[in-house]
Length: 294
Image (tube, rainbow, N blue to C red):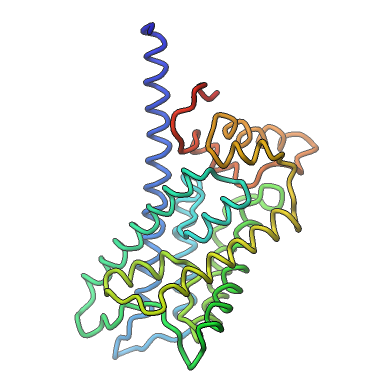
């Protein structure tokens, strides 16, 4: 192999690694911050027991902060349900989605561990793990989590869709999270995020009805993705483009970057949502394609 070809291959690998590592660290960081501050607001301090309003506002601010810091690096999913929704909507590849979820769960666990470590033993309690409250049945709890997550993911899609909104989505997504907590705290403690439930559960070692906080949010996320991407604001991706995005092949880059070119034209209605962070990342997380990306 010629030296020039080797150099280009090495540069491509370096670019791929930098893009992937930055995005994964962003997801790790965003989820860790979200869990540390959000779950921290649930702790039962004798001097000042938390109110539902305080919890909702804290999760609102934690979400807005995490999104503002990381959305240009990774899209600021910070939530396996959101990542699944983007996968169903053909906005990210399967390899990237799997890696994102792993980073999110790791970040949530580290965030919960840090919170556990700095909290006095008599205050830790159950570390804010999600449970079914107030005589709600498991079916009611799942349904509530479906609805709460559905509204959150719809808001995320609308806030990050270049066809509908410009600028940072942090404030609107934070508001949606607060809305969910104002209702959901009474039913389940309000998860809407499997990573938020997973981190504290791992640290405490308590997984009672933990499945609710996977089934509910993931189902709500899929429904929201189908509603937004195929009913409210359908795009014009072909089946071949969707398969290319799913597999993370070379064509993904063309699909992900091309909408930004279209956006500068008058007919920008078909611009792909989320291309802002796809362009930032530069490359999809996948096995190196046979043809180098442009």
